[in-house]
Image (cartoon, rainbow, N blue to C red; front, side):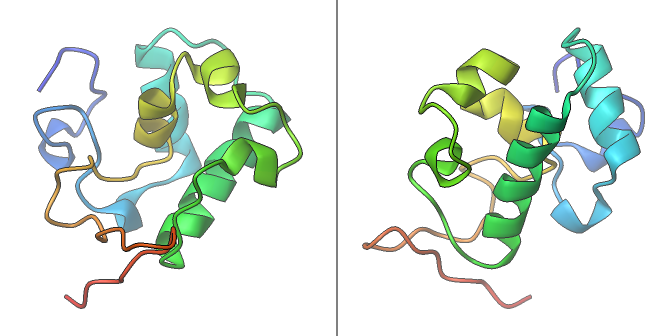
Length: 114
């Protein structure tokens, strides 16, 4: 785990991603953003975070969540530096995490039953 993971380090994997998205909260997102020196999260930041979380938890994967919000295609880079950082702050597991729903052809995702 890197040094930029906030308190409760046992909740995060070695890459700094929250292992269980259900443990996420806005306060945790603020702590992660502060550790990463992102500054204040604006309404647009929260719109993208909410879109990422909603899509993930509903079992959908959007190739372009920024455009789905009516934002420029590079909004994640502009707001967070990259999509990976946005994904971390949204409290979603890393791409190689066993908890992450696998993507299927056609842009959807298959929800894994626990």
